[in-house]
Image (cartoon, rainbow, N blue to C red; front, side, top):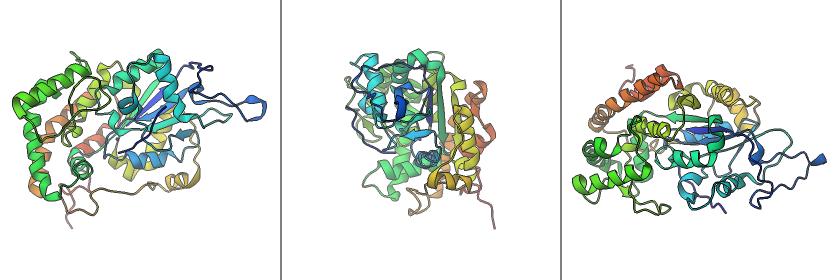
Length: 369
């Protein structure tokens, strides 16, 4: 059975052709409604899965989506099925039924949408391939939603989550180590070429090879995922998580199509939540019926969740802030070109404002008073 665990963003929306697994003991079919009119998770046309990016606003998005009556969100938010709980030795039917068993307690007569958000899905190179394996018979119905944040701000927030025991004074030194490492290994190991795709195993093997030859042990961080049978090394750099373009390229390499994506920005979540919810509704085809506390917050254009890893921390030192901005600029430019080239469903101007740190809140572009 699935075990839950959570850490903190982008959403996958699966409009699934019904695959009946009525005889599978992992998916209950007991109905307690009159005339046996229950509909179960594996019978629904849609499933909504958040894929990332970490520290981009996925918790706020999760809280907001609770306001939509047709969504049934997994209670812990982060199911982590495709990164932590996926068993590659199981057959497709078993994996499919195990995944949907996460919503076994939900039953109602009207159609509904099982949903979960696991932000690590975006950066883990295995995840899009595992999703395609399970949902390959209905892959054309999948919809992704990604929420992206200015990578400089994301790195500072992510540092305080990932770097246990470190203080803000160590942030500049750690980022400079990371920038050097990525510069040495990007073309050899971290760049994803959508015209010459490598398997996740090959990509992680290249990353490990480059680490040994050009970086050595120690920082930046390399972590060995326990669920992988291979001794592959997963690059878990706080810095690298902000290079979004390669993460999206990897989804295309796995066979997903650009038209299946809706990509929003953190700034849009903060300034136009109702507009974001409307876009989610339109993209997924669900009804826009709001409910409960979250629904009332959405009606007032207020995010239901308010929280920050950096709110109580000192401001980022200006020198490293500008170094990081220069470092990320070419990757952000690649991303904007990539989104335009493939006609992703996104507001390019809003994404440019977010990625280039040009919104008024940002310290690099704050209005003088």
